[in-house]
Image 1 (cartoon, helix red, strand yellow):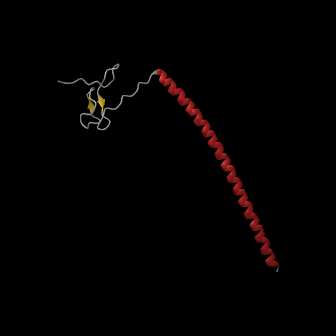
Image 2: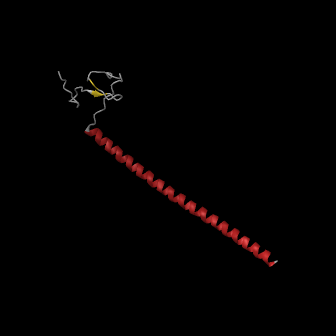
Image 3: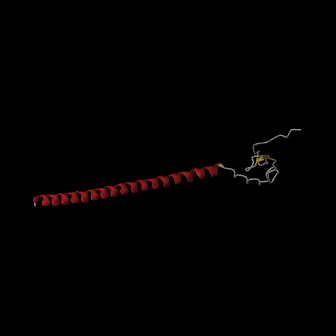
Length: 112
């Protein structure tokens, strides 16, 4: 005799379930896998239209927050770039002053 296999959940009736450890298709009433004895996984909650709408709204809010955080990060990057530019300018000024002082010292030695 061949057993009929139901793969989809039919309005609250239990169906066969797949073991997460060994992938065996188990009988609907089995609490553990017939091969590896792994426990039956918990049923996944059904997604209703109301829950889907709430999830969509939450996702929109998260995306807005993420966008505002990215804007802040971009502003921070611009500030960091400005600071780096100012630091480079300061170092260049120091190098120029040192070069001028060295040139003056060389000129003074040459004059002697």
